[in-house]
Length: 132
Image (cartoon, rainbow, N blue to C red; front, side):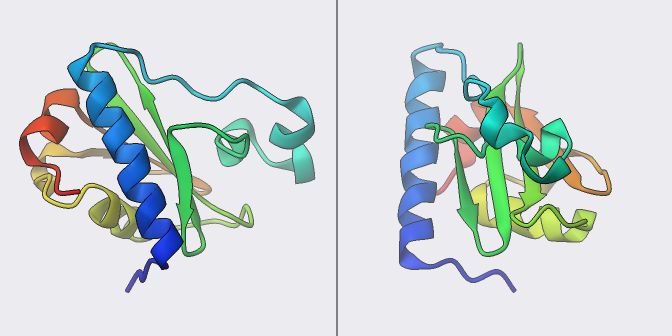
């Protein structure tokens, strides 16, 4: 079971509150600017290191890093292991359940991988269902 520290819970609320504001204002949720010194550290693939740069749409919980980005009609959530290790779809889903509390799991699509787990859902689902 994923247990979030107080600072991780505060960061979740901050990130998701910002995303809700951006969705309401029709602002694009972008990945952080690329920093080659951070993003290519330790031989990680690009998706494994996305969100290492400080940015308004990412954070950590337990051993996992999460990063949101907006697409044309969906939000994309990337989950990775902080240490760059493999993670299972089930571990990714546990993080998603924590982050997207209240959003029905049936409305969240998954694209599993070995080192990254990718989840997609409609922007409006956050406005309707998300519990901060």
